[in-house]
Each structure stands twice: as C-alpha cells, then as structure tokens.
Amino acid sequence: MNLEGELVVTLARDAQAVRNVDVRLSRPRVASRILSGRTAADAATTIPLLYSVCGGAQGAAAACALAAAGAAGFVAESPSRTAGVIVEALQENFWHLLIGWPNAMSAEPQVTAVTAVRYLIATSTRASDGSDLLGDAKAMRELAARLAHLAEGAIYAMAPGAFLERVDVAALERWCAEAKTGPARLLRQVLVEAQVPRRNDVRLLPPLSRDRVRHVIAPALRDDPDFPRAPTWAGAPAETGALARMHEHPLVADCERRFGRTAATRIVARMVEVARLFAELADEQDAMPTLPRAQSVGLGDGDGLGVVETARGVLLHRARVHDECIVDYQIVAPTDWNFHPEGPLVHALTGANAGDDAALLRHARLAIHALDPCVACKVEVARA
Image (cartoon, rainbow, N blue to C red; front, side, top):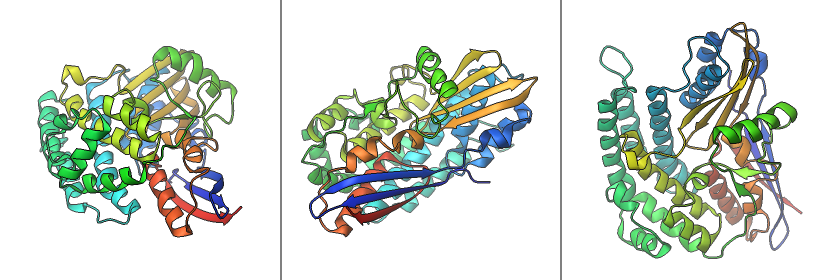
C-alpha cells in the first residue's frame, strides 16, 4: 500500500493576478488502522514499506516514537539512525537540485550525477557481507568526502565548504555568473525573476526542542483531530524545511531580505544546507546542529513522539503502546506543513502576476518544487 496521496493546486486568476489558491492534499490517514493491534516490532518493520519516498526517515521516526513510548528493544538515540537520516537527506537533495529542479524549469536534468550518488550511497552503507555501515564513523567520513566531491563537480564548481563563504546576494550573483554547473545556470535565471520581493506572513517552524514538542505539538496532536491533516504551530500555519533551518545563515538571510520567502530564497537555503550536511555526516563538531536530527520525546504512560529532520522538513510520528502493541499511531509529514490550506504556498502564489496561463503554470511549478512535496502534484488554472 502507498500512503502518499496527491496534491492538487488550483489557481483562480483574473486578467491581472492570481486571486485565490486552493491547495488540496489527499492522503489516506490510515496509519492507526493499519498498525493498531500489531506489535511494536511489527509496526517498525511495516512503516518504511508503506512509503516510496523517505522510507528511511519514516523508519527512523517510528523507531524514535516507539522508544519514547517505552516499547521494548528500541533505543532513543543511535549513531547509525542519525547517519541514515543524513545520508537519505543528501540523496533526496541531490535529486531535488539535479533532476527535480531542472524538470520544474524545463531544463536538462543531470541523471548521470544522481545515479552516481545513489550507487555510491548503496555501496558505501553496506559491507560486502551485508552488514550495516551507517554506524561506522570512518565509513561515513569517507562517504561524506566522496559525496562532497560529486557535489563539487555537479552543483558548486568548488568545495561545498567554500560555497558557504558566500554571505550576500552580490557574492551569490558572482557565483552564478562564474560557476559552470546546472544549478548555477538555473539559479541565475531564478534570481533574475525574483527581483520583486514578495511578502509572506507564514512563520518559520522553530527548532523543535523536547520542551516545545511536549508543550505545543503534543497537546495539539491530542486535542485537535485535524492537526495531522493541517498542522499548525501555536495555532497558525508554519513552514518547515531548509529555509526554516538555515534562515540565520548570512547568505540565506540576505536573500530573504532581498527577495522575500520566494523559490529563490528556498533553493539557496537548500544549497547551503546540503553544503553543511557533508560536514555533519563526517561528524565535524563545528557543523553539528543544535538539536539532533532524530529525537525521541516521551510523553508518559506508553505515549511517545519521534521527531526527524528530513530533507523536506520536520516529520512527526506519535505512537501509543500498551503491552507492546500499538494502540494508536499518528504521522505528520513535512508536506502536511508546507501545503497547509493557508500555508506558505498559498502566500507565495496569491497575488502573483498572472501573465498567460503557460507562464503562470511555470511560476507555480517552481514555487511548488521549492517547497518540495513528497507526493505527485497537479496544477490547474481557473478563471476567478
């Protein structure tokens, strides 16, 4: 069974601008029905198989939630789990920057580079005897160095760490003009089209510390039956993902001042985060995030939350366990945050210059791509 669903975005336009944006995310909410009554161990095995995208992160979130709920055999923290989340995020980001982004802009995707990344990850995370190498620090340092080398050739035209030294839009524009990579060429085009800043009042989801999870997220999951379908932070929609995590980096902050929270700013935030992920995978201390990539948050009495920072944003799993069996299970994915009916996509596209339908569709597809849904997406244009 595949639980991803479909995203349908309808733009109601008149002759001048988009007047209304309708976002409909159809996703079967059947995790509890599928898992209730199963053992915790069976649930942990089943959950990654239900998702074709980010199955590793789903498995990590499940393990964290079950550990937090007190299920036997699950640990709250694991170096191999953290490494797996980072490796999967890197693989997803390579695809996003080298295939998804070109497709959104009708450019040539870099399939060969992404294939090389996937092969390298597949052969570097398993030993010849089939054992898992994600917990092997030396193997992860070597993998980080080799992935960074691939990124240097395909994305940055320089060492990823050197890209992080760009601290403002002027330096970014020089990089776009000088670097001979597909992302540099695409970003140059995106920056030209982003010169008019757009206001966006949707807040960025703050780092989810255990206290914030216990006092804000957990009560909402418990008391609001619509929360998994349309999650909010303190009662209002919020954006998750690279921009929320990287907004304090000088380059990302300058892009936000110059362009607002547009596709351009979100793509730059992703490129900044990818450059940092190599150092994080290599366990370089100055690259470590403030909070773990995968957290277990106990809520007491067989109730626990798993919180995982994926490529697309925060993934939440809540497990309630009694006598080692699942009583209830909830999942809130990054797509649920970013494609909230009143969320960042609606703000990004409402009021946008309509132009002709073809131009509007291109603009919308880039905005959607930058927010990175984990489901198939269809965009429709209607007359207001």
